[in-house]
Length: 213
Image 1 (spheres, rainbow, N blue to C red):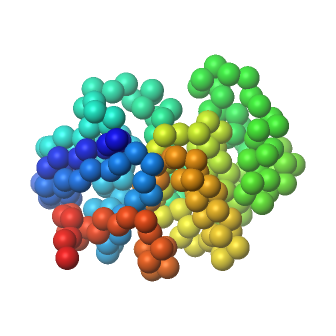
Image 2 (tube, rainbow, N blue to C red):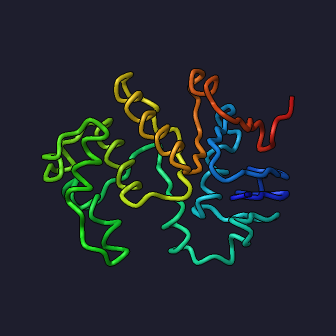
């Protein structure tokens, strides 16, 4: 089943074409990697799928429905986006991990949050840690599991392993691989050659267009 169908997608900024005539289909449950040099339009494409960037021409369908017709709040409950630079809010890790429960009017499940922390090699005591005390790798892992408190249908990852040490990178990959095994559709951007070589499916962009061999 198609989870996304992108047809002749175009995005412009300041009268410049950032994406041009992008067309592809993403099957539900795949792990897709988007690659290409800096400035090729990778992040713009991912943000467009996340509804963080509008598009000027073409069409995106999500589960058969035009993306522009879908309620963005409901859409973002199913499609989670992880920024390259982790964005945390509030004061503590708890503030961040409780947020997905709050927007769904569900009681915060501390046991689930603690287990998620342990799953990315962080102690449950991190729940009460001030976010200003976290390292870059710790912030990235907290941002990732915040998106996973409720398992999404689609996980969009914008170069989230950039700058992480080898151990942390391995931990993040393990979480992502497990989600993929559970049927979550993964769409990620990476510059990492090893990640690209191990990718299940790759779309390469160049100058805002899909590069075909």
